[in-house]
Length: 304
Image (cartoon, rainbow, N blue to C red; front, side, top):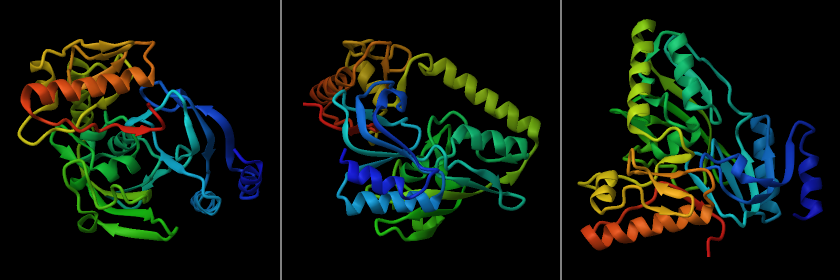
């Protein structure tokens, strides 16, 4: 990366963390991926905005990173900047039933905070392996719950660096989508509207859902959760299983035998293994059933 760009970034703030050639296998739940040319961790919204401005002015491609739970980075790495929001993770009560959470806050941490404050409605998200920012963009959901049902307001930076406040209605939530998807907006904070509840019942519900996940999902292996979106009228895992792909592997990447909707890294998978396996699954399911599976996973970098 050009040293002049690095010098400009250093001028933003002494609090801004700057790394070069950072191995992305440390920052994705697949535990694969080569180095990013720049890896940046701002500690404030102001620094985040300034970082984005410098990168845009310098024509440096960049990616906003939460927990890396839906990201597959090429083994060759990424010739751009990754901006991690892990330091922008404040969670506090805005009022009695409203939680304020910064975009980098983990869903699991927010669920625990809600439980500790006897607030119910967010139990479904306790096991969603990502940040609230990413969850808003894709309207993440599980076990009958979704972000649409608990969101009061979303605060996001648009492509011009303006801070916008969007109501639940303005977010246009749909199945695994929202008004922000594909627009390059950065979710910096969210207001969640929950309800007063019994802490013991909330704890019990979270434990019940955690047990269900452990029984049905391959949590013992690195993965990106459900690898494919649910095709209309079908279940991705069922299609993959019925196509005879349970346990199918490419290198160290496997279709989970516990849940065929998950692609897992059994320990020595490369990103290319995972990429090729995803392609094989798509082809086999289409050839067998005529159904196109669309990955939930974002592919970053060159896989050719």
